[in-house]
Length: 315
Image (cartoon, rainbow, N blue to C red):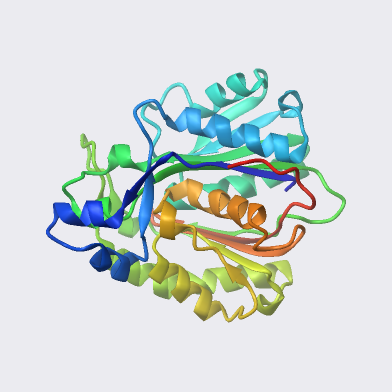
């Protein structure tokens, strides 16, 4: 991993504003989710457009021209149409018009899934330089009158650039799914808004995911105490903190991007990584544990090494 970038829409929607729709208070939302505000994309801010900005910033931070990119992967579950893929538009607009390009949908685990696929493509010789973007406009799939989802989700994009290396920078992935529980988070057939069983998802995330994360550490030959950072999917702050506590990585910095960005599904992990580096929360070249989990139910975890020195790029 040689560069990161992100894009956060300008509009910040406070928990007080959403709570008022339901006769609640901002504190009521914060107590249950830890979310103070979330970013909403405007009509002109699309999944593709946000991915382009985040991708360009990642390339700039890596010091790599877009023409060198030979594979573009966009992880997203909120793309508005199935054909053509978001990734082909991103590749063309960035200046990599002949790059292989495709979308990957594993919902909130999408970034981790795509990261493993991208790393394997480089190891196998199918690609040399990969641009991987998680981009979501979750608000386009949320019913503003639904308490369970409207208090959680936001919009944004995050990106990383991957190249070959003589030393491992992306550890082995531990991943899987439980399709028998896929109805806990889904868009009904023919529907246009998301349905989520929040309490059941919370129980699953706080009981079933930390063993997956520990397996990823074990496969990478890393003890949790050796981690400099833990970057879970930013589902809600209670889940993030519960996961970090169970891992026992007491010295690691825990990403808490969810507080002012909300749950941005596949975009949440790369957005959080970019912020941690930009704000100096962790040092370059640090070891971090990434943990994705969400609709499907899908899950994934891997240990990575953050980029070394990067150019400063405003996100």
